[in-house]
Image 1 (cartoon, rainbow, N blue to C red):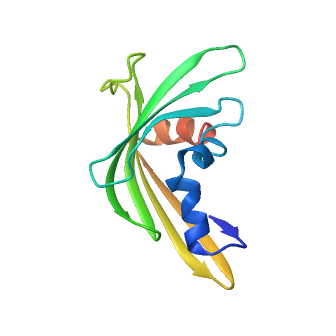
Image 2 (cartoon, one colour):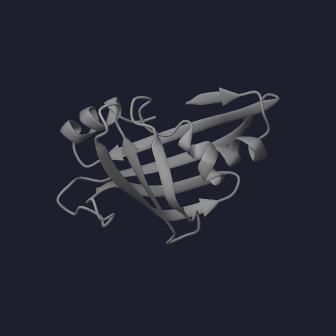
Length: 127
């Protein structure tokens, strides 16, 4: 959960604008570059992250539900170097909700991991 001194529409832009998303999604040591960004049901987001040593990892989202500016739900996974989903790696289901809170907005995030072990590892490298 995070609280913002801004209206829901403004906070939604943190997700809707790929350049803003790049500024905060993922671990600080591995900033993402968004290559594709389609926040419609069935839409895809693809990205790569580059670490401090130049190592690169790729990821993807598949949007399952969206109702701007209140919520976004998607599956997040790792990709091969060519950008295709790596089916051998676990995925994470992500639910994001924006709620009016006082004069600002509360963002609630829920991550559903494939297993406890995946959750422990994933929690260290995400938002």
